[in-house]
Length: 276
Ligand SMILES: N[C@H](CCC[C@H](N)C(=O)O)C(=O)O
Image 1 (cartoon, rainbow, N blue to C red):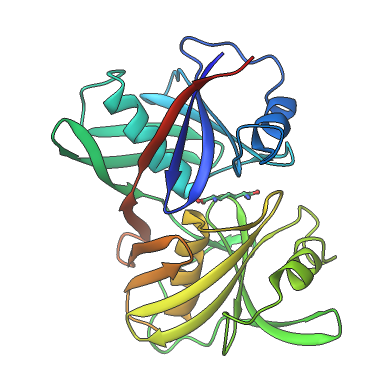
Image 2: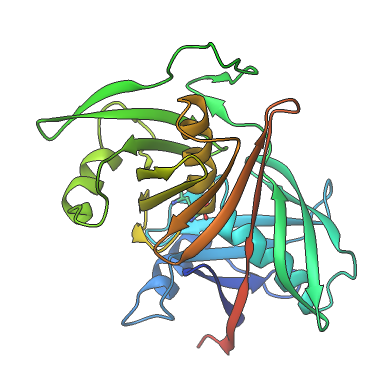
C-alpha cells in the first residue's frame, strides 16, 4: 500500500489516498504505522476519501487507533496532497470531517501548495455554541483539580474537545506526568486534548499540547484555535493571535461577527513510501 508522510509544523501523519487504496482496519493500521521504532513513525493516520458533500473527506486516527473528529494540521496537509498530486486543480476546496465541512484556501508557489488558510468553523464552549461575546462579558474559565493542584482552564470544542490551561511557564512543565492526568480526568468522559498556554503579549502566546490518543506532539492546529478562542474570551489577547508551538507558528484569527475561526499555516511533504 502506498502512503505519504507529511507534517504541519512538526505534527506528522501518514496519509493514504483512499481514492486508490483500500484500508480494511484503519484503527489497527494507525497503531502500526505510528510506531516510531517498528512503523513509519507518526502522530497517527489520515485517510483521504471521496465525499458526496464536499471535494474530499478526511478520516483521522490517533496513534493509539482512536478516531478524532478533526485535525487542523492534518487538514492543511490533505489540501496540499490533493493539489500537489493532481487530485484537484482548485485552490479553494472543501473537505468533509466528523466536525463538519471545512473550507480551505491554498497558496501555490512553483506549482506546489505552500500555505493554507482554513475556515475552522465556530468554536463551541461547553455544550453550547459560543454566542458573540461583548467586551463586558464575564471571564470564561473554571477551576479544575488535577493530581492535587488547582488549574484555571477553559474548555473549547473545535469539533474535537480541548482544555486550555493557563500557565506562567510552559518550558519546564512535566507534561509526560500531568498530560495523562488531564486526558483521563473524570471531568472529560471522552478524554481530552490539553493545551498548556503562556500569554506572551496581546498578540502572541506559546503553548505545548498533550493530545488525546497521541501524547505530546510538536503542534496541534485545533488546539491552537482553542487556545486563541480561550485567550480572546478571557480578554488576554486581541482577535488575531500568533500561536507559538514547539514545531512552529500558526496564525489564528477569530472573526466574532461571523463567529468563525481561521487558521493559517504551512504543510510539508516528507516522503512517499510503500507499506509491506
Ligand atoms: N493534532 C491535531 C489534533 C488531533 C486531535 C486528536 N488527538 C483528538 O483526539 O482529538 C490538530 O492539528 O488539530
